[in-house]
Length: 264
Image (cartoon, rainbow, N blue to C red):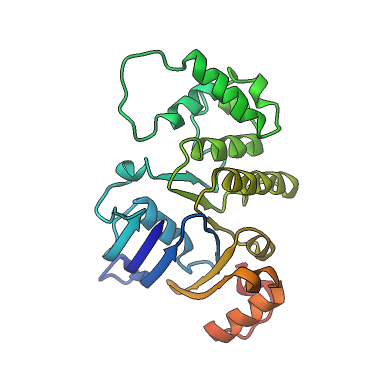
């Protein structure tokens, strides 16, 4: 479903601030893979997601989504293949529009627009049923402005919107980092449910080692713009935080055995 081949990306090339963010990065996701991505600050996690989403062009290499080479496509042309939830709950929704209007925008992502009613009766019924999945009572507030929702409610809504079209690839960019622990746990629970229900291929960046271990069927660790660890299947099921720290220390040559290794 996703293939990254020999991806390189350097920022501020030729200046004193030159930074090689991705270095000959290779990654292959099978349909249905739910991959958690972990690593220290500056490891290249968000750069990789931004490269996949088309936020900026890569210097070299190729990006293929479901057999289609999207390397040269701008972000808006990749929108029909990708759903994304950002770290900031304020992103991904339009605050001065209603819940149902935001969902209508998400439902039309990547499609031609025309002069017709913004939200049809059939769509309202569909959105009402979809919102029930969240268990937050938003199905009874469909005409409320999104700006009135809490951060957790907005993030849950954004997650639903990102998966509304069943994208080829769902990108979760530290989407619970700005939430309190209880709300974060609820959003992660919803993430698991939506990925499982719709059989989505997903990639989730997190700084939380426990979340990286518990969620998904595969875990990759990044360091200095490369993937240094790729764990899946039974090995991942029996993984512990100490295992992760030990493996990181062994592969990256870092000796500090504390959470600070991964959680800067």
